[in-house]
Length: 168
Image 1 (cartoon, rainbow, N blue to C red):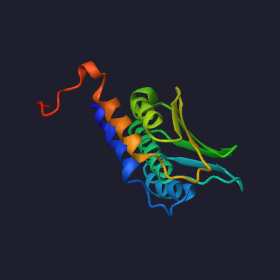
Image 2 (image 1 turned 90 degrees about the horizontal axis):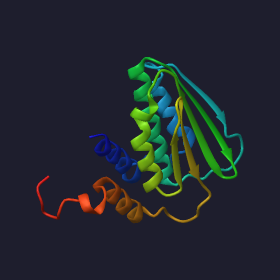
Image 3 (image 1 turned 30 degrees about the vertical axis):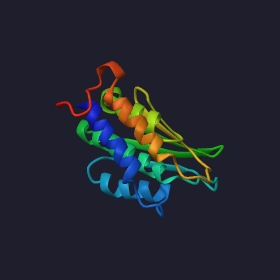
Image 4 (image 1 turned 180 degrees about the horizontal axis):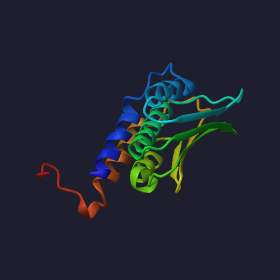
C-alpha cells in the first residue's frame, strides 16, 4: 500500500503538477496558506537573486514533497521549517520536522521521486527531508522515460511481476 501511494504521488508530480506559469515561490506560498492554519510553519527564502528555472516536473515534485511533509507534521502535531536555497543552479528545499518518523512517512515516496523524475533528488534524514532540483535546462523533461521507470519500479523485480492480463 505504501508503494502504491508513493507511486500515485509521483504520477501526480509527473503528470498533473502545477501550471507551467507557477514559480517555486508560488508553490511554497500556496502550500503555506493551506498548511499554516493547522501547523506552525516557518519559511526561510534564501534564493535571493540566483537563477533557478524549474521544469514543470520540478514544481510537481516540490508540491508533492511539501504535501507529504505537511501531512506528517499535522498528524504529529508538530511544526515544520522550510528553507529554500539555490546553489550552482540547483534548488535545495530543506524541510525540518520534529517528532515525526520521516523514514516511515516519506522514504518510499522520496526514493520514487529520486529514481523516476528527471533532475530530482529527494533525501530523507532523521529530522528533515532534502529535495534537490537540478535546474537550468532548456529541454523538456523526459516524461515517457520517467513514467516507464516508475512503472518498472512499482512492479518490483522482473521475477515478481504479474503476467499481462493476470488477476490483481
